[in-house]
Image 1 (cartoon, rainbow, N blue to C red):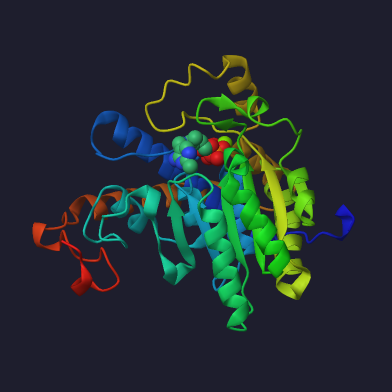
Image 2 (image 1 turned 30 degrees about the vertical axis):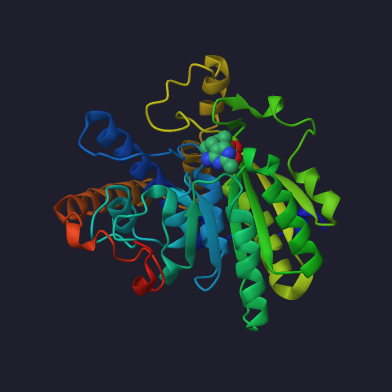
Length: 332
Ligand SMILES: Cc1ncc(C[n+]2csc(CCOP(=O)(O)OP(=O)(O)O)c2C)c(N)n1
Ligand SMILES: [Mg+2]
């Protein structure tokens, strides 16, 4: 299919992508500030720089579609419609969190919005998403499952097994690689001999596409095409979104392994200011509208933080609850 046939986002969808990216960025900034100052006690794997992928995916997927992501998937959750307060509550271990504060950011699930889980085990979400997609097909649902993971995950056995199985079983799953060019401290060129992640899918008879992961409009087109093709029975697809991680692997990492010029060049391509300017230049949104989005989003993040800080911590009697599907069979 040629690029010209790809779906183009409407004015409302473009505005929504900017709004989501702003919410993702401001949440990330607030977490960095809170953890840095000691206000928040929690672990966090920042997504700053990767907002465009999650915003486009969030706009492309239907509420009834499902998403699996990783420890770095807070932006993916926001895109899928998980309230920021629920995410923060899980990160801060509060009783009001969807997992009662027992999961942390690595294990966030919010099925009401189709956010099925995140996992801290690199590559582990990929076969789980294939299982969810298989279940949806067996139930006759018109649902697509998307799974988001990093470049490093494509070096794991579970990725290769899962893509092969999805191809053979022909299940409705879209593999979304957020290639941020680093796996922890190691640049991607030291962990892969192939030039792109996209070409790996050819080994399994699955189409693979590489796209600029900082361009929301481009991402919208490619992801829409992949998701709707899959929904229409076209089988699984792999989309490699090339982007960059502006902060350390986890909060507090000094990024000493990342050449300063490489980081600075990536920051020049920060998807937020570039998209903001594009929307202005194209007359999609006016300055007042965009400034309004930014003010309202900042207020929403403040509100979510306030709500979370006031929420109770779990009490000790809840310690052994929700650990097993059937608590009566608890081994201890
Ligand atoms: C199976 C497994 N191996 C190693 C780790 C340690 N680890 C945590 S994150 C990470 C890097 C993963 O890189 P990538 O898949 O590119 O995702 P990113 O963190 O860049 O989003 C590693 C090696 C792990 N959690 N799980
Ligand atoms: Mg990576």
